[in-house]
Length: 504
Image (tube, rainbow, N blue to C red; front, side, top):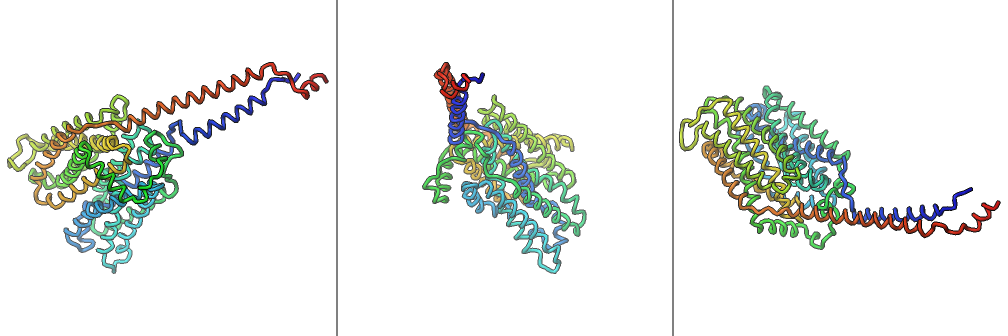
C-alpha cells in the first residue's frame, strides 16, 4: 500500500525554507569562512615583495663591479639606491587612492607585477645593445622599481584583513612585511656570488628579468581582490561598506583620514616610534663594514653580520606574530612590543660596548666574532619582532578606517627617516652607532604612553556573536516550521485519487 503521509508538502516546505535561508546567507553573510586561496594570495604578494626589494638593492652589493662595467662613479651607484625613498614619498598617496577603489588590491598587485617586469627589462637593454648610454636606462628602471615600493608596503595590513581570520592576521601581516626584507637579505648574499667579475653584472640582471616575469605571470593567472565571502567582520566592513558620496573626492577623503590619524595622540606616538625605529635601524645595518673595520673585521665578515641580523629579524617577526595571534595574547600587542624593544635595547647596548663609539676609542668589553655575531643577531631578532605588532596595533587603533591608511602613514615615516639618514650617515658611523641606541630607547618611552584600544577585535567579537545568534534563531525557526507542518498534516484524510487507488 502506498504511503499516504504528506511527504510532497514537507519537501516543498523544506525547499522553500532552504531557499529563504540561502538568500538570507547571501545577503547578510552570517557565516565567516576562510578560503584556502588565501595562502596563494599571500604567496604571490610575498613573492612580488621579495623581488621588489632585491631589485632595488641590485647595484649596492656589487658597487665596484657596477662602476667598472658601466664606467660610472660611486655617487651614481648611491643615487641608484637612493631613488627608493626619494620616489616612495610622493607615490604613497597615489597607492592609497588606488588601493581603496573597487578591486583595489588586485589593481595594485597587477600594477606592481607589470611594473617590476618593465623595470627589470629596461635595465637589461644596455647589455643587449652596448652602444647605448646605460645611465638613462638604469635610472628609469630604478625609478620605476622605487615607485613599486608603496605598492608593496602599504597593502600588507589590508591584505591580511581581507583574506585571513582574526586569529591569523598578525602572522599574515608579518609574512607580507618580512618577505620584502628577505628579498634585500638574499640580494646582499647572492649578488656578489653571481657577479664575481664586472662582466657578470648582466647575468644578475637577466636573473632579475626571469624572476619578474614569473611573479608577473603568477599574479595575472589568479589574484582576486577579495574572497567570495568575508572571513571576519572587519573584512566584511571593507568589502561590503556602502559607497559614500565623499568617495567621489578620493583625495579629500584620504587627507581627511590621514588628519584623523595624526590628531590621535596614541596613533601619532606609535607610528612615529615605528618609523624612527625601522628607519634608523635600516640605515645603521648598512654601516657594519665601517663600524667594524677599525676592529680588524673584514668586509666579508661585516656582510655576514648584516645577513645574520636581517635573518634574525625575519625569524623574530614570524615568531612574535605567531605569539600575537594566540588567543591569550591577542590583546597584549603593546606589552609584547615593549618587552621586545627592551630586549633589543639590552642587546644593542652589548654590541655598543664591544666597539668604538663617540665616547671611547677602545671597546669596554672584549669582542670576538662570536660576541659581535650574537649581539647583532639578537638585536635584529627583537627589533624584527616589533614590526608586525606595530602594524596591527595601528590598525586596531584607527578602526574602522581602512588598514591601508595606518600602514601608509607608518611606512611614510620610515622612508622620511631613512631618506634623512642617507645624507647624515656617510662618514658618521659613530654618530649612527649612538643614534640607533637612542632611538630604541625613545621608541620604548613613546610606546609606553600609547593607549591601545582593540576596537577592531571588539567589533569582530560583537558581530560574530550577533551572527551566531542570528544563525541559531534561523535554524530553530526552520526546525519549528517543519515540526508544525508535520503535526498539521498528521492523520490528514487521503485525497480522492489516493482513496480510489487504495480501493482498487
